[in-house]
Length: 89
Image 1 (cartoon, one colour):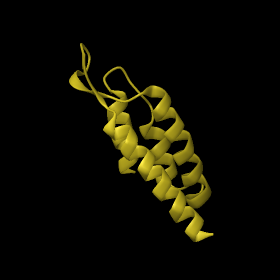
Image 2 (cartoon, helix red, strand yellow):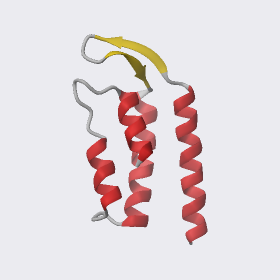
Image 3 (cartoon, rainbow, N blue to C red):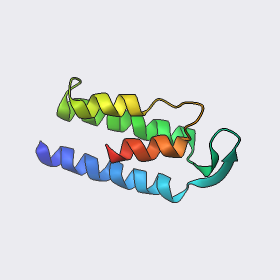
């Protein structure tokens, strides 16, 4: 079972690397110069990682709660910033 979780983390890490490789430069009046990632790709990865964290760590874990909190986009946060923060967790 633990091997299955490790394999799933590896699969999601690979998916995150693919998203990272497709990031695009953008300019916004709110965030200035930065990057963005495809919102559908980000949502797809976020749902998968959220499920895995909840399964492995539980919904009361610090990692799970912080992952949920970090996924909130704001006016001054790019999709790439959300992506990078979530992948750091």
